[in-house]
Image 1: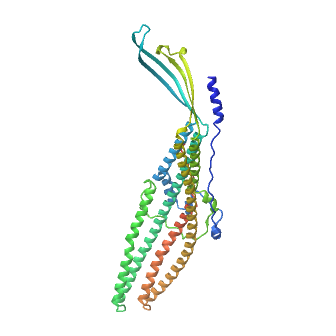
Image 2 (image 1 turned 30 degrees about the vertical axis):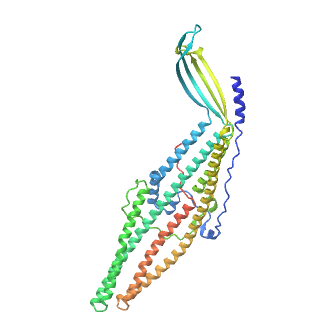
Image 3 (image 1 turned 135 degrees about the vertical axis):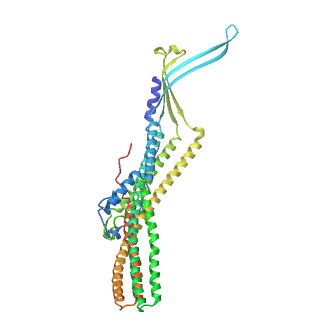
Length: 466
């Protein structure tokens, strides 16, 4: 026993001699946001549950249901829980593996007796006790695998957060689009009523001989063209409502009643904050960073396999030649240290190491790619939002001018002082501009959603099962 301890103690001291580890993270350039500083508030009001900025209780309720029942989120959470189990497995690899053992052996052999005769003998033995095996982690192989599992679990948690953010953004998009389609449908119905009124005026004019028959056909054509937009808008609205229900995991009630009216056009200063800080805190960027750490730990573990491995096995229990002798008199133990080194198979270990190094290089390249894509998304979202706000203001002014022009032209026509052609042109331009304005108003909120998703604004982290 003392000899065994003299072998184990130096091994425990050597177990701290882990191989080198490269966990360097590639550097990246920061975003220049000075062009947008005057158009966005510098201190964000909130980075979690950003959709509450819309102040829509129905949207809040839908997102709450979706966070609890969305199937994509449930799958991501299951993957995260599986990664936590792998951590437990790797942690147990660092400890002795102790198993209960009970065995019985019966064997027969032929032997020559002293008088030269041939005889047969039966041998029995009983073994009962605890068997333990333990890898002394001389060069950190087991430790590095445990750290790799921890890093991959962190990456899985980041992917779960990314899934939650993506689901919330998609649900908010569908909800805002449904509101916009509902508003456009109301405008299209108003357009139909407007054409019906115009048709009545033209019919009266033809009856009085004041209008040409072709103007009546033009008015009828305008009415039919206005009606063609209604089926498409109804279909798109129904699909948007169905998509909302699917995103909610089927838990949301079908939205058959009208949604709350869309908010006023979003053309005000939005909270923004430190863009570069949020860039590096995006879940996908954090996950890519954790993948670098995980692959680096796996490289270190593969490097450790080039060096000797020390395993320690032991047994303590009872050993007897007869079952009736199992007891205090049959107590036994053994300690069996073993050194292994793949001296003749280093090529295999080196090949595995090269493979792990290639994976680590790929993870660094992936991190750089994720950063570039994140920068593109943020810059693109900022650019689209600022330019869209300018376009929205112009459309708002254009719609106001067209409404005034149409009212004047229609008033003159009703009293017989104006031309029908002018009414027709004004009405077509006004209806088209109203539809464009409705889409632009919806787009202002869609751009806000895209910006906050690009910035990594997300969801308050719920308590997760351990």
